[in-house]
Length: 207
Image (cartoon, rainbow, N blue to C red; front, side, top):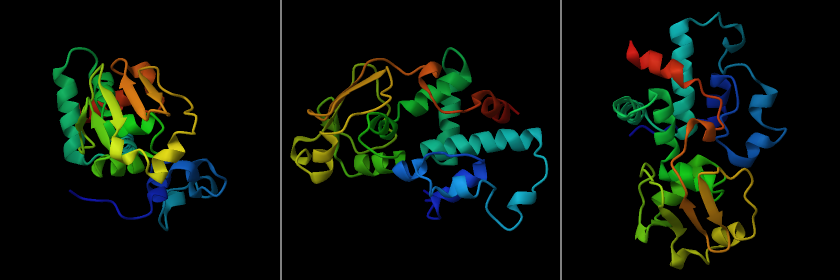
């Protein structure tokens, strides 16, 4: 699988806004997006008007980068969403939100989705009592996500115990002292607080 190794702030500048890929740095004054909001590259500031297709493509790229998935994975989520009942775009966002790495991030354990993905990859978490190290694992309503007992004394997780999680989604709950969370319900479109025009992505793939 291809791995992006360049500066993540370039991705935010390319999409014309903050994707919050760097955790706390994204909220600081030194954030490169705040200083240089134009797209990267020599001709970034002078780019011409974007076509309808270009806008749809950029929306897809932005969403992929926010959730940290590759093109093949993203297409798979779209196809799954298209087979489900309901609105395709909303189904797709729900599937992306249900990724284990995103859930760990939403619970406040990771400062960014990238960090949360790394924590999952390193087998720090259990789902319903079983170790899961697959970031794309899709959680279900009622699932219990917890830090493994032998990892709870890790310095990183000791700090989490004293933190207060802000803006916890209503479909999740998390107990910092126990380092344990639960999926209360499946996420809906109202639970996705990211500015995404999912209908544009559906239109792109429908062509």
